Structures are given as C-alpha cells and as structure tokens.
Length: 222
Image (cartoon, rainbow, N blue to C red):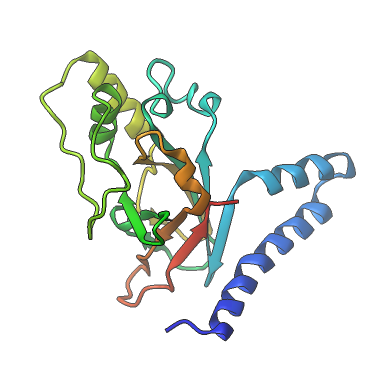
C-alpha cells in the first residue's frame, strides 16, 4: 500500500532529475543558449525517473504537431491523441518496456477511474478512416481493442505505414541509450479527459532479470 513516505519519495524522484537536468544545461551549454534550452526543457514533457531509467511523455494537443508525421489525414482531427514518449536508460544494463501494457488513465466526473489501451498502427488507421468507435468513458474492466474492418485500400495502407513509422520503434532500450516515438489513444475527441490523465507504464524490466523496476505513472494533466 502507498503511504505518505512513499508518495514523498516518488515526488522527490520526479523533481530531482529535472533539477539536475537544468543544472547540466546551465553548466555545459554556452550562455547565449542557456535560456532557450531552459525554456525548451520546461515545456517539453512530463517525466518520471527510477533506477537509472527516465520516461517522459508529451501529449500532442495541437493539430500542427501532426502535420509532419501525418501530412494527409491527421489522427487528431479524428479524435485520436498521440503521446510522444521518450525512454532514456542511463544504467549499464539494457531494459525492456512492455509497450502493450502501457495505459492512458483518467478520472471521470463520478470519481471512477478509466484506462485506455494504445492503438496499433492498423487500429489507428481504422479509427481515422472510420471514426465513431467505442466511447472512451464507457465503463469496462479492461480496455477493448478496436478491431479493424475490411478497409485495406490506399488510404488505409498509407495511414498504417505513417503510424508505424512514427511509433515507438522497439521495446528494448540499450544501456546508455534512448528510444522515442508515439503511442496512440482513441479519445473520440474528448481531449478534456487529459485534465486528469496519467500515462501508466507498469512493465519495465532489466534484461536478464525477472524482477521489474517500480512502475511509472506520469502526470499529463499539467
């Protein structure tokens, strides 16, 4: 069970790496660039760090962010949210992240919690081309994946390819390396759900070991 001491330690674990990163910027970057880098650090992502692993997450809540990756049909216009995540491993051993177990969690008006599973590239293409799927706030114990229909035309293939190319490329993060990409969540345009949203990452394990690191729960509501 969580207690006050544990919550305090989790907050310190989140805050200290941010302060350390800002200090590193100030000491290694020429003075003319310090301010710009500092501002960029503040506005990029929410993050959390444990045992040498840092996971940051940035919801794409502006249509302009999607133009480069999706020049023809934007997931955002169809009510799908992209979350850019970066997984940095500063330890001496590789880690594996269970990408399929990552959830977007949020609290509804009746104080119940809900969670969404991320979409595959094919599911994203289907959601964009055939909007109007399941209500993301519908109460269910486990997220129900969207099943793709028979649409395998050019638009579907192009969207699927674009989504795959922009997605997190691998679940394995080598020692002293970083992996980043997009996760997709079908919010049906209810982007106000981000007001209470967290990105829950429960499965991060050290390569060659069965024991996992403590879970990551990144607050996206800022």
